Length: 317
Image (cartoon, rainbow, N blue to C red; front, side):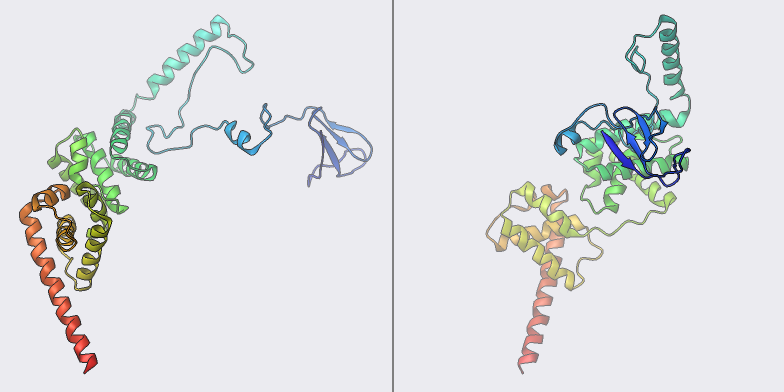
């Protein structure tokens, strides 16, 4: 298969012609004017296999794993594998023993430093937790990056690795507005809830992290799913929260408590009854908090209705 190429700097040394032909089948570069073979050892950088469709080509691609912060060595480790050389020939005994020795030294050198051993333990725990919490890959990568920053700042010395992993995951979920409560993360972690909460506060203080304020509307779908509520009940709860937000009634309150109160109010209005204990348990709050937030929402909705009615009467008059 011949291909006509026009390199910018390559020219025929005999006639100065710049139109050269690359014969990839024979591995030669030939001048199109005088026929001089300029190069006879072209290396084909393409794959050794053939593909006749785009799907087949995509399936046969062989590329290594991309760099990932969630791997302790970022996926850039050295691997000694097999007893054959690049041509598939069996290695001699002397070479094989040498490669085995190099493999052993390489494996030992990976864990000679304390921070490497720390990352190896932490990334294994991070992988377990993110899988159990069903978190996407970008959250996992950001959590790993946050943990690496904490390790570089020497915040983990003398403290629990697992607690820092759980706190990093929770902080990343907060930054990305992903509804994962700290209690759920603590339940799946090997450390206690209080320890993870202290570690999270340490991260906020030492790394100067700014967390967005949680919106109660983002907790409505998960609570409604646990209660198996009707779709229109869930939508009504969102409308109640949006109406209360116009009256500035959501600031300074627990977002999960507000979401639970709006759902309970929507259940009553939509005749999709649930008792307070069920709603409070699904939201991870108490019945007292639910009743307090419910009274507050009802008062805000009444005040807004009165103002809207007064405004409507004023326009008519």
